[in-house]
Length: 236
Image 1 (tube, rainbow, N blue to C red):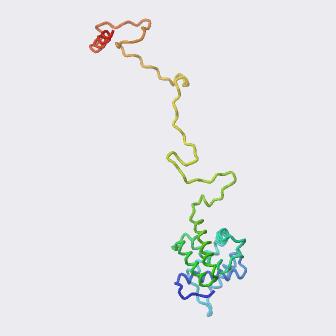
Image 2 (image 1 turned 45 degrees about the horizontal axis):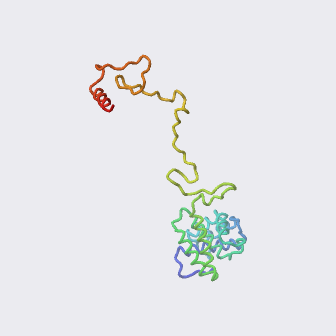
Image 3 (image 1 turned 180 degrees about the vertical axis):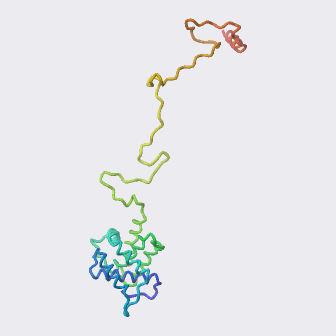
């Protein structure tokens, strides 16, 4: 894998990491991260014929090795090919590095930057169709990684997918408890029914007298009661 003169130091570190991942794949790594881990140990032993790997390259390689199965699963899910062996090895190595950059929560690299850098690398070292392919796959991976956790969880058979919609009464799809309705007097227990207040003593009653009751005398009626009585008599 040749190196492009216009690369920044970070871009060169990404490409060096992709070089090691590519070589491990040529050694038959497949989905076995042990091959990549062994190759990284070799590369960290300096010889006169080698230049040291940048620290960022080492961090990227270690991240790819530790998360190889998850990285390959994301790539395979969005590459729309029968298997990873159908992807050009150079493109696969570069995408593995870029996907780890997007997964690495401790990284200060934005997802779009990781994608742009990957496209830049394959544009200089791979086929003419590689930039568009790599960009499409990595952008689909970016959207999945950035999606809410519940949307990435497989929905079990018979289970309804969760919804983000809510209303004022609570989450959508959940029955909202209504305010308890007071029972009618006939439906309530006798002890729950409040007794009607007794009429005030001395007030005129419009109903029939109960046994033992009597009409109030004029002395017991107040001025307001007498005025009301006069108005009632005038109406008649």
